[in-house]
Length: 236
Length: 350
Image 1 (cartoon, rainbow over the protein chains, first blue to last red):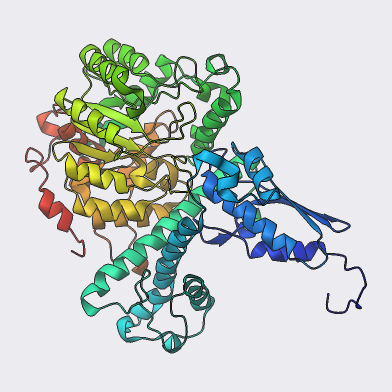
Image 2 (tube, rainbow over the protein chains, first blue to last red):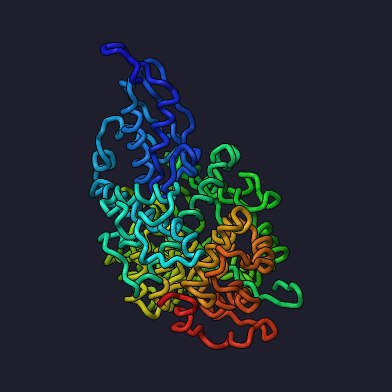
């Protein structure tokens, strides 16, 4: 893209659309829609990019479905050269409302009218907090197995890993401390360090949050495979 | 009764269904929802062993003979508790009503019992209907589906004032067990419909009632577990946990079981096959054979022994439903009520 001369028409690449979708997550599962198999198709014609999304069931929660469609719209719209993004959620009870609402940039309340009282920012934040807890467990497990006292560790003490990067990203997203000097264990609401007294409970909840997300992800993958006749390997 | 390695298990299937989701029962104009609902259920069946899958047509409407055979001849079940789900907005005669369940249970006394249901949005008429249903069918429990659509409404919460009126009335009528099933929609849609916080409040305010949270709050196991540690009258209904994970995701099944044993305890977990989503046979047999893996990632979790499996498969639900258990199928301490305070503390970080 950077090679394009000023004033030249940038043609979006199909691969750029896919890369943009990699940044769109299922908020409940904290995983990219691309790796979950939720992207049914994506295509570029001229400056228009069209993406079809699909979900494991006809009755997946409409609020999370809306977030994924809206996030996909924003991500694909930001691809250089894309003048028009068309995001279509297939085979869902609220497909028509969601597709129309996102295309009109109506927001959640504008889309669902009296059925909604507010936008989805609080809901999303609640689930990022769960993702922080689950991510903390992923980072802590190997450290605990080595006998580390995780309560005293700071992020900068932890060896680099994709899990650590992801934890930092999610903490930053919530405005929680994410720099090297900040503690590994922080309260997901306040960002305050966890006390020695609370450590055991905190780690128990972190483990539980991760088990919940992973079990749900397993069920969602199985349901999607059954619904669309895909193999689960194709969607991983 | 199921016998394996000299151990005998009394089996109560505390969450099973007898539905009619055939196209003839779809409400005109609502066909896409009726179809979407049953196809969603059918996809869950896909998580069980392939040899137990049914074609969609049978799944939409299975027969009385199918049910009796799958539960009692092949499935090792001693007593089944039918759980109604109405969905009359989509299904003309209802998806699975008290009448349908009750008529079946009357034909098979001793083997089947029916629960009823209520919907707090039904007002005074609903309270009268509840009393009539209790009088006619003698249910000990109700099944509540909070995400049911009704007109423009997309669901309700147990903490709604009307719901408290209904819970109080149900208790007066002799109802003991409240089976709670969370679904994907609730008003307002910007809130998390799967949230179990309302069960927490209701369980505190109705300490005489037992709240069995079906599919253990999935997809909110973590919120459910944490709540259940604090509420002595909250139980974990294992429908979907065994059916949806034990075959398809054995590693996650072990972890979810581990969390439930850790936070909730084996005295407050109840087996339910969720029939016709899954047949009980493979679930009962697989559960009896199941053991917590020995590797490091499962080292935090309590183990489950034969007595624990007996409680979960039947003895806990038998206690909730006053079902008589033959002497040779009981365990040493089964006659004592669950030591609730102790159960909360089993392995839990309290």
